Amino acid sequence: MPQLDPATFASQVFWLVVSFVVLTLILWRVALPRISSTLENRQQRIDSDITRAEEIATEAEGVLSAYEEELTKARFSAQEELHKAAEEAIAETETRNNALTEKLATNSDTAHQRIDGARKDAIANVSGMVEDIARQAVERLVETTPDSSAVASAVNAALGERT
Image 1 (cartoon, helix red, strand yellow):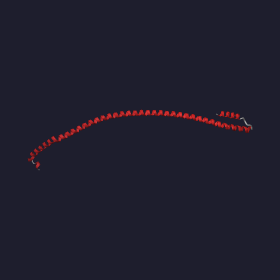
Image 2 (cartoon, rainbow, N blue to C red):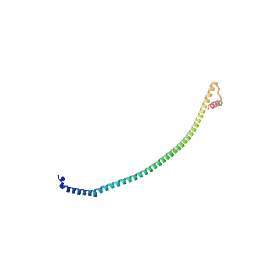
Image 3 (cartoon, rainbow, N blue to C red):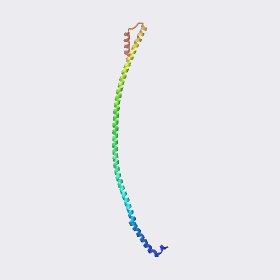
Image 4 (cartoon, rainbow, N blue to C red):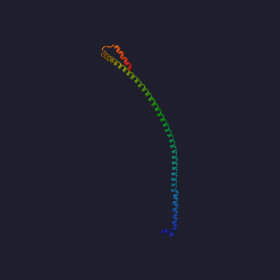
């Protein structure tokens, strides 16, 4: 094997050193700056992303705080509206109840008046019939015709005791 021949060691070492120096110079001048610039760019991007994330987090906290404050105001406003609506409903209900009570009282008074009128009419109708029946009964029992004013006063006295 020619690589292991001691006569070619010097040329092999020379070319090894030249290749190593050339490769080192290429890496030092070309590859390492690109790698280092890539790493620096990456670090800058990471730092800017971290900074932006912190800004966004701070902004989000502010927005969340404003949202919670608005939500609290909205809840308070909703409770006030519900309270006002409940009060209005109660007032309207009371107004309707009062109107209905008055209407029922009026209807009740009217009904009582109609009932009293009907009772008086019924008594007047019955009183005429009772007078006729009483007169006929007295005529059959006693066989005399009673005075119509006496029969009317007796029937009125009897009906007056019942009412």
